[in-house]
Each structure stands twice: as C-alpha cells, then as structure tokens.
Image (tube, rainbow, N blue to C red; front, side, top):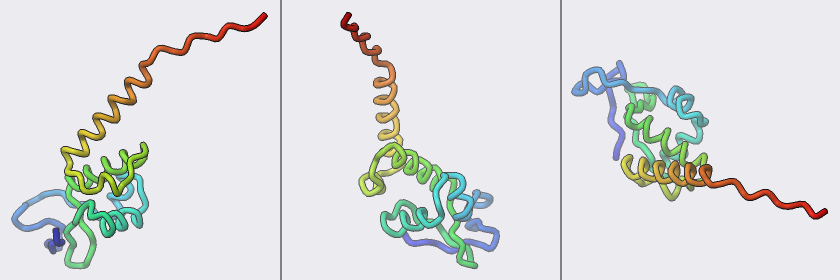
Length: 118
C-alpha cells in the first residue's frame, strides 16, 4: 500500500481529527528501536504509514496496535517473517492461541516429588 501525504497537522483532511503518531513515539510505545520499525516496514511490509509534507512517517492507532502485537509475538518466539503478512484478526488469533497454551502449561500439576534413597 503506497504512502499518502497528509496535511501539515499530521491528519488527512477527510479523516478530521484521527490521531497520528511519529515513528519515534511509536517505537517508544511498542518498545523497539526506530531502526527495527523501519526494517520491518521495508523488509516485511508490516505497515505503510502516511508521511507528512516534511517527510515524517505518521502511524494510525490501528497501525500502532498491529506493531505492538507483532512485537509481542516476536518477543515470545514467533518469527517476524512468518507473521508479518497476517491481518490484525489473524494476529489476534495467534496471540490468543499462544496465551491459551501458556495458561495450560502453567496450570499443569506439579511433578511428584522424588523419593530419596535411604
């Protein structure tokens, strides 16, 4: 999806007051370096933010949510290349499946204590 230019205020005129976030703010929100954010955009096409007239990338709240979910899933071991093209609903399903699996593994009965040889 090609980037679109937005007004100087960082908002597309037809969208009114939709919030837009610059890359440094997004990187802080999702706890990743700006360089990683840009690599994910270029290499994997995870989001296509609009740009301001001055060239700043501007991310929507939905794009920030997608990036946060991708970061969360990569932090628990999913490869970005495997999940980058999934839509938001599919990413949420992967996260839910992962959370269920973690809950089941933590809910297992503890191992029986080993008896000591006397």
